[in-house]
Image (cartoon, rainbow, N blue to C red):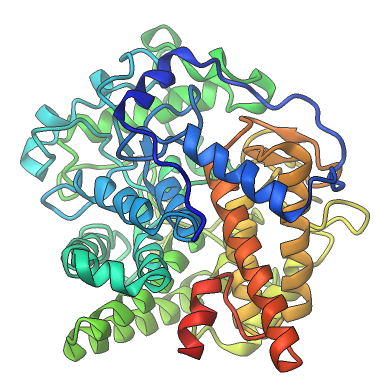
Length: 501
């Protein structure tokens, strides 16, 4: 197996010395001609350079710490090159889990200057403010969370090299932590009382400044502009980043949560939303936890996880499905009315239930049509799904989560389309993702029409998921040559191998 060379701990010093490269205007997303092997080597180099010795940073200076769902996607790609490093990626993240079960959205790297990123460890004060909620005393983290894709990542990593996992007791050690993580979300975060987890900060959705959050955020009084300094503007274009007003609101929400001790029973958040993307990944990961429990021989737990996955899928459909829109919508729990109200904005998060096994076929078919419609895909564009409604007034092709196409979202959609039988569309989306990664040197996100790279260059989850897509493509080609038709895959070469074994 071709493996990424694993840099040792001194690589962490690079985080403060290697200049960050924001992606300049890139050519349209046509192939640059380096081919599959060249693209794989480039992606592997990105992950090697962004490795700190224990985990992978999303980019060298804009995001110089370990991010939660980033690490899950990184592990999914790393499994094809270094299964051991993929396992370590998840282990390092879960070593910072709080006693209440939450997995923090940032684990801070102690070698990075404290002012390199804001909000910094000095803002979150996890070891002090989070003590009652079980924050670890030996490392600093944030106090909020990100989408729970970790169990799915752990299962895929195990499938890549089961013998290694067994020898290291990888699943045995991670399963209790993953189950506690899901337990936290299913109990302490069920703010609406209908079985869905609520996010209490826009950053918890993973789609930080989505236009879907504009209305719920409008009720939040921003922190004074002079009370914080934005480090992100040192490394990225202001036009590509959230506004100062929104950032002030993000800071206010985080500070209020911190001042309540990160205690979900005591906090009174001014933002509480049932997000379809977040809950879809929770449901998909419950299916993965069922597979993990089955592998570990605990059939009772496996059945419980499958039951919970079905409950989540049912709650998603009852609470967030909008038949007229042809997609799922977020529910603002604090809007007028006993049950809050659906947020009318169309986000790609509302398409992510495609990633849930067992989603009713009729619903999956409608989602597939919506994803391919003018709301999300330009016929003459890149072929990628935009993060927000292309026809919406708030759409911006360059501004973070207000319109650009992101690799991780499209990877999840590719996976969902494939598992629900939309193979032709999934193949096209995979090709579009690889073309964009090639043309933009693994940019953080791209203009969905022109393919112009935006945000950070050499972005880790873009590189990692490129490796995963290349592996799946290669597995499909081998299957077609050997059996006359492609094997059934879910963006995973290892799953094909395991299915044949």
